[in-house]
Length: 130
Image 1 (tube, rainbow, N blue to C red):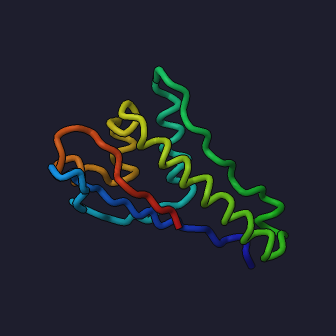
Image 2 (cartoon, rainbow, N blue to C red):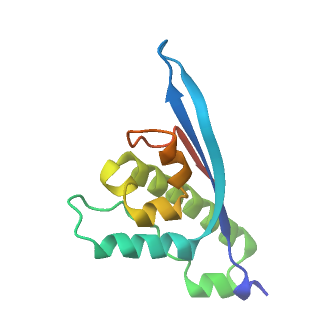
């Protein structure tokens, strides 16, 4: 029965440090697992704040009827499309220094240790959502 299953997304982040010769050197990498509800909770907290820029669009939750009665191929296609949309969402969050410095984003993406490694807020060099 597929009704009670959920999808976890593996978010891999990598922080690079620029060197004097123009090359980048990996400074840290980490991976975290998040459910869609974690994305939604973070997004809801961000919406409650008075931000100067509009938030990136969070992809919708899977329709209940599809989740309960949808064919496996349709559900896989939905999950894959949402994974790509969540990747774009995270990338957009991290491109904006106003957003990446907020505690809910810091906590959601486990950015605390990465910020210790650098003085200026820079987004991770690569982000992969699986």
